[in-house]
Length: 357
Image (cartoon, rainbow, N blue to C red; front, side):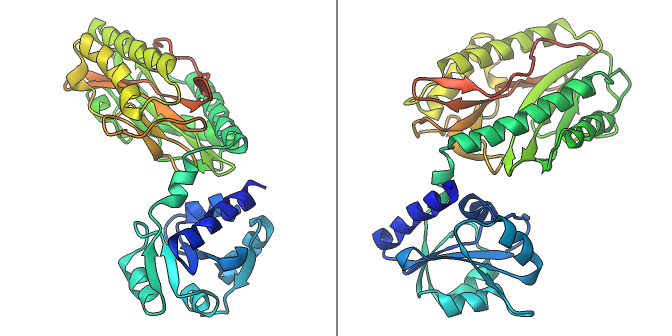
């Protein structure tokens, strides 16, 4: 199992860094290392990796049965009723603990210092997560296909006069019907002048009159996210919006062709950015070209002007150029790709020709 391989890789850091053990608190990282299910919003489980290859998952009564069925390669430590997981940790862990310093709350960190010497782990697990194995890619593809099927079915009921909220409700209904375990994020729908908001939440605004509508969508399946954006039009679009759509699509296709291991995220971002600048839209492209996708909707590596690290085989990233012009509207088109040994493979199959409802 990949979980055991990942835990073994982390055990190598214990000696290298001079730790007595490693404490993992981030629920996404615990899932990555053990398969134990998680709910974002609190510290419900603690994973302790000690010297000699030991791995203990501390859980409360609430999570024990589910963890027992799903966690792989770890010893389950069940807390007593009323006992805090941190108190149980003190009974099994060494003093020098490598910890996820950027994730811990101040309250938890202060409690940790009373029994341990916390030492920064430095994002080692997140770095591991950037390179996906075949099983992870398959889970992402599964989520993407469900998203595509849901949007295909939702399209059949799109018509002028719908509100943004009705549009997202139609899509999300089909997402659940297609097997979505959860939404990868709050699905975004923004139309007309509101389409200049890259993170536009759906409102009661009605759409029509040739307005562009940006749909940014994703689901979770087998713990992994999909991420796709399409821009469609409700009514005949203005000529300028058609030009913007064509420019964004050309920039995206150029970046998809150029993507290969060894180039930096900044270099890939520059491929799309250069085309939009040539078309006169460069100043309206105000975000990075993309980001990593996996257990979280936003992971490394960065594909932006700040993306200095080289892309490697196994990275799953988005390619999503966008143009947003105040008072006119916005267009964004997004696919996911996986980097391969010699280039990249598009994980998105959904149509991206200009559609008018």
